[in-house]
Each structure stands twice: as C-alpha cells, then as structure tokens.
Image 1: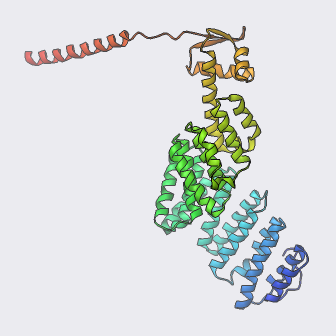
Image 2: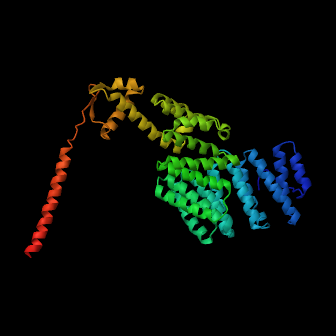
Image 3: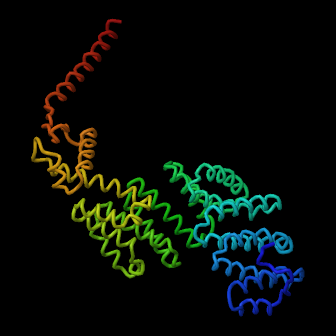
Length: 426
C-alpha cells in the first residue's frame, strides 16, 4: 500500500467525500480519499462512493504531479475491480492512464504502466479493456519512436479487432498504423491504412475529434505527394472540427493550411487567413512563424527565409512535417536565386556570389557543386582560384534527331518490303 494511506479507513459516504473536499491542502484531501477507498464495505452505495473517491483522488494526484502514485493506485485497485462491472473498470483504468499522460515527462512511465495493465487484463481475460490499452501503448511507442515494437503490436491487434468487428476501435488502430507507416516513410502503406480507417468510419458514427484526426492525416499524406490544394481542403476540415471542440490540434491544422498556401505560390493569401475570425484566437508563435516564411517567400528573399528559420526554430524545424516541406521550398528558392545571379557571367568569384545572395561562402559553394552534379547548369568549380566557371550550353541541332528518325523509318520500310518479297517468292 502507498505511504499516503493510513491504517484506519473512513466509511465510504458522501460525508467523507465532503470532508476531503473541505480539507485545507491537497495532501490532506489525498490522505482522506485513500482511507475512503480502504473501506471494506461492498454495498452498492459504498462502491458508488468509492468510484467517486477514485475519480477525485486521480484529479488531486494529477494536479500534484504524483505520477508514480497514480501508477501504484492502479495496482492497489485491482481487488476493487473484481467487485464492479467490467465497463466501469475500463472507465477507471483509462481515466488513470489519461491522468498520467497529463503530467509532463512521464512517457516512459506511461509505457511501463500500459504494459503492466496489458499483462493484468490478459490474465483477467478482459479483452475489451486490453485492446484499448494496447492501442494506447502503440500510440505511446509511436511517440517515443519505438517503431518496430509499435508495428508488431498493431499488426496483431488489427487482426484481432477485425475479427471482432469493433469498428470504432478499428478506426483508431488503422489511423495509428497510417501514422506509423508515414513515420517509417512508407507512403503506400500509410495511404492503405488511412483508406481502411475511412472505410470503417463510413459504417459508423464517428465523433468529431476522430473525424478531424482522419482529415488531418489525409492532409498530411496529400501534402507529402505534393497535392497541396487537396491537402489544404483536408486541413481546413480538420481545423473547423478541432476549432469547434477547442482541441489544441487546431493550431497544427491552421499551420499546415498556411504551409499549403505558401507551397502553391499563394503566400499573399496567408495574411487573409490569419486575420479571419476563426484564426485570430490562435495568433502566437506558430502563426507568426508561418507569416514570416510567407513574407520571405513573397519577397523571394533567402536572407529573410533563413532569419525566419532561425527565429522560429521550435515551430518550423522541430515540426517534422513543416520542416520537410520548407526544406524543399528553401532549396528551390536558393537554386532560383543562384541561377538568376550567375546567368550574366562566364566566370565569377564564388565569394562575390555569396555576397550578392547574403549567405555563407561554404554554403553557397556546396550548393553550386550540387547544382552542377544535378545538371541544373553546365559549369565547374575552380577551388584553387575560388571561381565558378560557367560553360555555354551546347545546343543540339534539331536536324540530327530528325535525321536519325528518318533513317529509322527507312529501315522499317526496307524490312517490310523484304518480308513481302519473301512471301511472293515462296
């Protein structure tokens, strides 16, 4: 038993609950609630009061950031779970796991807690609860980048849930699998899992939050395929759903909407979207970051672009989805600017190009060598002299391919005539 528990119990009555609520500090309230849970009475009223005490105790422990005590509480409540219906047990267990997730820096604890509960539910043959805890465990493993373990867990779970035809849980698991495959850069499997989630969702009523999650994942996959217009419409749907629910994921949907506008060369629309009524309450570092990128793109300025990436590193570089798309946007912008600057020259100092583009010399040199290898222009780097030598592109005379095509056609005619004469002679 926890050290917070006292040897004497308190009767499971509304008076005891009121006493806990009226206590001067949270520690005293927690102590009283532990004693209420210890009441050996198993009457219907006592069980109902104990359930209320567990809920209140969970809230107090969460506010006090006592994650380890929440974990111990789940173990201590196992005898109590045998006295109440399985549905209520599932509600309490999931409530405590959710409470632990609200305490910062508890990822490892959540994973070990879910693993413990999976073992217990398996031993107790509580299939309904086990499947939901396993789905939660898979989500935590995905967040911790334990992809192999998460995939193994999901593969077995999907087969089991499909057999039971639990559509609502199947939508969750298929969505998780889609996110997992996307993290592993397996786009075809990510799309297949998302399609399976949509198919399952079409057969049942899907809560708005879950529908928003489906739309958000759809937008991410379409953006990955460079279909930014379709991605924008999905992000918009997700934003509306999350905004109505005041879900914190609304800000991500808005951020990705703005990203899509920038990627389709409509950076000027960003200011209009930000100033709309729905978006105004999300004004903050994330929105400011996308606005800075949009301004830099509108001005075709690499200097502003780099400043935005530096000033809003957490919002841009640490978000893998935004970072991936902005990297390709930055490369395109850099190549366009370099091609425009070197166009008038046949030979130019790399230092001069770096000064004109306002970027570090080694950065420019590396990019120019990459562009030469990618055949973006014909040239070579004279590193001894620190110069870039640009060759004139040799224009292929149009007559040469035309002549080759004519000769090829004449060959076909001769072959055809030979075949015909062979038939006549036979």
